[in-house]
Length: 163
Image (cartoon, rainbow, N blue to C red; front, top):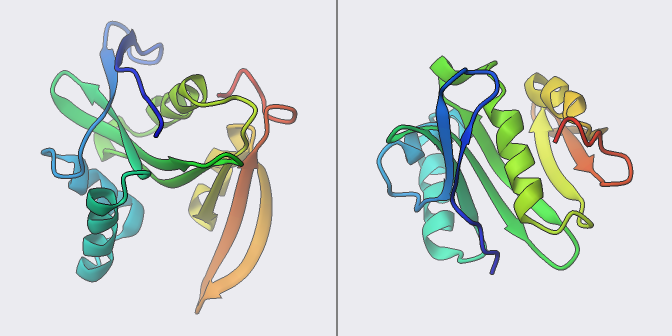
C-alpha cells in the first residue's frame, strides 16, 4: 500500500492560491464529478470506475483541492514494477493552470522515482503527456474509431523540470 502524505502548497500559476494534495475516497463530494471528465458520461462506465476505487485497495485517488473544493484528481496504482495512472482530470475552470502537471509532480514526489509512470490515453491528451516528459507510443485503434496511446515516464528520460 502506498502512503501519500497530505500537503498544502502555493500553486505557482495561481498566485496566493493554496492547493492541498490528499488521498480521498471516491465517494467524497466532487470526486466522481471529476472522474466523469476522465471517463465520459456513460453511466455504466462511471459505475465501473467508482466501484473499482471502492473495492480495490491498491487503487488510490490523489485529489488537489482549492479550499474545500476538489479541482483535480489523479487515480493510480503502484506495483513493484511501475506506477500506473488510471485517470487524471481537472475541473473545467482550473484547466490550463498547471494543476494537472503539479499533480504529476506530487505523484512522482510521493512514489519511488525509479519506477516508470505508465498511462494509456487518447489523442486529445497526448500533448499533455508529451509536454510532461512522457514517451508516447501509438497503440492503434483499440476501440472502433478511437486511437489509443501509451505514455511512459522514466526518470532516465523524463524532463525533471516537467514533473
